[in-house]
Image (cartoon, rainbow, N blue to C red; front, side, top):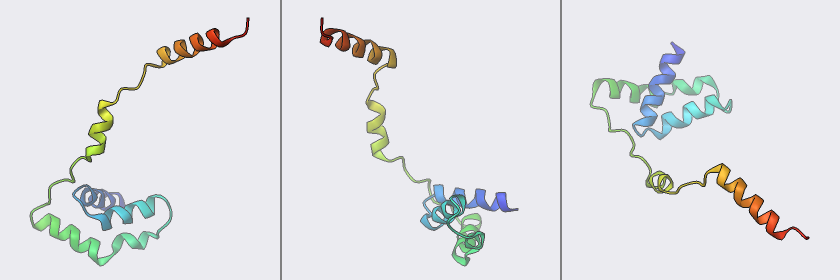
Length: 92
């Protein structure tokens, strides 16, 4: 029962419920009490989402798209570049 309720709260969080998100995060990080998962507003939100129309999932943040464009250098190339610089600056 508990895992099904947490899944429902996660579903609400994905669809934009800040209250559901914070409740699950508080429990996950052992900051809040399990009783916080049974707040009347969370229960009402779950009933409303099951009976009524669900909201669309929260959109992907634009910053993630910008980060996807930036390419990280290949680690082997980074190591080769560092070795080249170290060899060039080594005293003879």
